[in-house]
Image 1 (tube, rainbow, N blue to C red):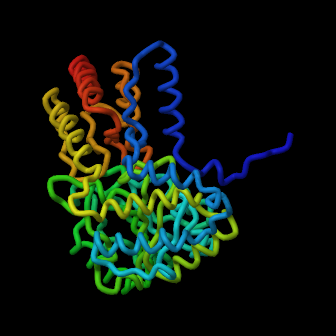
Image 2 (image 1 turned 90 degrees about the horizontal axis):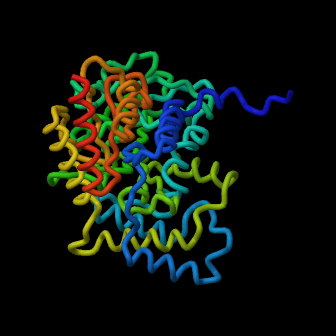
Length: 392
């Protein structure tokens, strides 16, 4: 029989996600009302103005040609304007910005563009699965950087072995974090940039959740550090902050050489993002720069409060995250992450993701996505409370 699967496929992704999906289907087949707090897919759409911009664009017959991999000049200029408005960072739209089919597109392909097989890359554990999967595709060896609760999920850079640093091409981090909901401050990024300079590392910062922060906190960009463009790139996504997940549009900015490398690779793979989607994304960024503009942060802050306060009331004491659309919760004693996730689904009809789906350091935690309306979140909390109290 012809084998039609490469060996590297066995190393991609986390089997836990498939396992959770099979659990969910089994529970649904019983007729159970399942509340899915697993995958971080926004449950709202973009603003009316963005939808109108998209409607107008799709009615324009000139929008249907090949768009090109760079991103339109309009989109890249708008990204540069937004970066200046949001972070006070100046970017060259021609050399330091490239459009992407969602940030996962760029994260999946960057290692292929800037490394060689056998190189090392430093990636977080726990971390979003594509970080490690991209290294499998590129033949790059991962060094898993442990992120732990006692250090506020910030890396202990000084503990990275010297031999790793000599061979590593880049260090990838993600703040605000998926799955950890952790945040980083500008002083941390200043230390990170100095560290990267000293060890000749490229910083790859995934900032997909920068606009989803709470309690007055404003996540910084690593590019706010003076001279960071020389050692860093940053990914942003329109998916979560602007409710455009299905549109598949994002951008990478920063180090001109890395931007050019990714652009060159993608020019051999795809033809870019649908022009109408780029029009809508530019509208979303322009609207975000208007005085008094609203963001999705307030919605997720209310949802966070509902879940955190509700779970505390039923005996599950979890921390209050400062950002993201997730809650990273240490599980009660006596369970593994997978065991409790399975039992919560089978007994309470609520989907959460086991922490070890994101790496070895995730064992002992679950990730809860705030992707349902408040009444459904309250119902999920009630069911989880009944489950927890029934197991005591």
